[in-house]
Image (cartoon, rainbow, N blue to C red; front, side, top):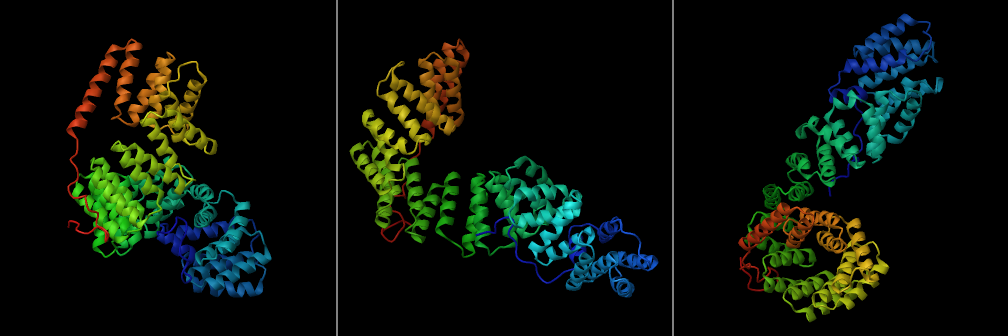
Length: 554
């Protein structure tokens, strides 16, 4: 798949180290040379005995006349072999002309004279970084940082090392300490944004995005930032970076797939369809790609195309149960239960021991009021995967639906002894206890309240758990708290009819008749929309497109 942010290829042949890097970052060579040479001057070392010769050499190096500067420095070093400033300047000149091995030798000699000489520590660390020697580079740069903790250049390169090692907290701290050196290079700004995202600092990352043009950064940065944004639930912001990466890598399946998946998550269904179709046209069609295409097409209202895509996904990989499950879910959405059963049957032919497909068949039975068959499938699913909640949840729901709340409660209590922090199980136990006819003041009623409160605490997005908890609060005359629960349920699922009806009751009891009337009006609108939006059964879903389902439509 795509590279993990922070992972890069090893450095190529030695380059003109710091100068080349800063040119790539739009920072002038003169400014960089000035930074390093100023650091050498700031070292506090007394002037050498041939100060005028050193000054001439420094001027030449500053003007990028590397060989001329070395012509002065080499005899100076012969006469003064422990002159740390001259040795360091000779290393800078060699770096400038691209002779990194010789530059490193000069920096090492400098440190043999003075192991704490900060300019040499920095320059050697930078050259090592540029040639992919990250461990020694980190060692020398950390030694420099101990003496100059606010040095932006040292923080810059250490931040990049931290990024490559995926130490994103340190990378964010150090790259942000580099100030303008980062802001002037969009690739480095992207690394800082990725570090913030990986460190959970979304707002700080988002502040940087306007400064990063997706087409102005390298493909590694495009991918890393796009993936990190998508994983941080910022899919819409990720799309331009992943699109730019796919444009740069048109034959990359990973780049195209991640773009399609991210567009789907961002609910940009048109972009998802385009990316998936383009990738397939380029010879990279797969079952997982067709699955994305089907979901996006269904979201666009192109159900027949979605059906065809699911069929193709199954044909491409008959052993992937996800395609059968998603296809069946589409059939259920359209109330095409017979078609859904045919899909599940084909899936179970391919995967006879799949607890998920067995569970899905149980759902289909239950939705058609075949509760005995549903119960058998849920029990079988539980036996196939005892570590999973599928079968037990299905059994609990089935027993609740057929009025056998005692059996449901027994199963759910047993499962909760093993998984006490499962919000769905807690909700079902609370609901089962309520359906068993318990009354306020009874221990089982308190148990139901406790289970429901724990359920919404563990997962605040469980709509029906809020509704059930709200009914308890109504019974206890905690009307304002009940209304709050019903409002939370309505916010989670605006189509949940019970939330509106309970809200109407709660607002009447709170002496807010207008709000009560509004809830009833909204409830009527929900019902009207549901009636208007009833979908007809899928005419072409009856035969999944696999080798085992002959006679399928094209």
